[in-house]
Length: 109
Image 1 (cartoon, rainbow, N blue to C red):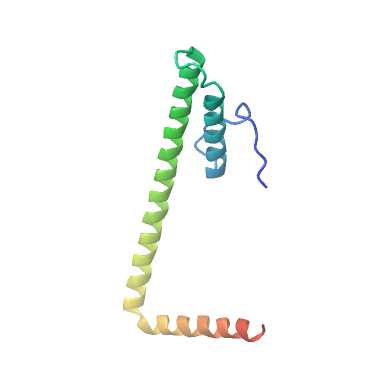
Image 2: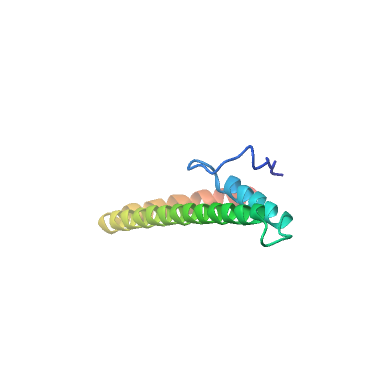
C-alpha cells in the first residue's frame, strides 16, 4: 500500500512521480471539500484557487510526460523498422531466437 504524506510534507516539484502528484492533488481537493460550507468564505476561495492550480500543473506534467514517451516509442519503432528493412535476415534470426526461448520456457512448465 502507498504511504500518504500530508500536503505540508509535499510540494509540487518537477522531479516528483505521478503517484506523488496525484496524492497531492487528492489532498488539495479534500481540503477544498472540507471547507466548502460558505462560498463567500475567503479560505474556501483561496483553497479552491490553490487546488485548481495544482490540478492544472499536474495535468500539464502528465500530458508532457505522455507526449515524451509517445515520441520516444515512435522514434524507436521507426529505427527498428529501418534496421529490419536494411537487414531482413537479422530480423528472421532474432524472431527465431525469441521463439526458441519462449518455447524452452513454456516446455518446462
